[in-house]
Length: 120
Image 1 (tube, rainbow, N blue to C red):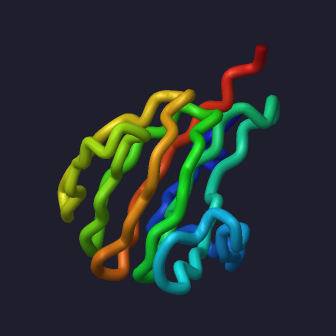
Image 2: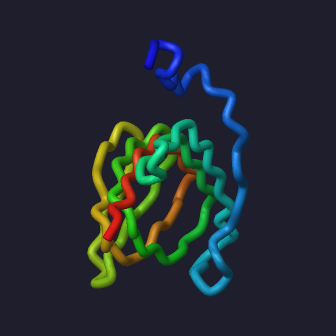
């Protein structure tokens, strides 16, 4: 393993994958999203990159543990009981596997993510 294996997000030329949540998950708007997965571990359990989301709201069910850092925009994360956390530029947080609720983008959002999918 050498320095050439280090993934520098500022130099990555990763092709973005654009998608929308399944229609039954969308609660508001047309939340088109894009993911630029700059790193995938050989075991396929760890991924890291940049995510972008357009204004809208959809249901979420995290099967992975995900570290996030908001780079742009404003979002609101709500749990299944309706408790909310507003996420703004500079916020850093972890969403544990098993979290269920909604993600709402109020202003176009961009975040760094590091996701770990724990195997059973």
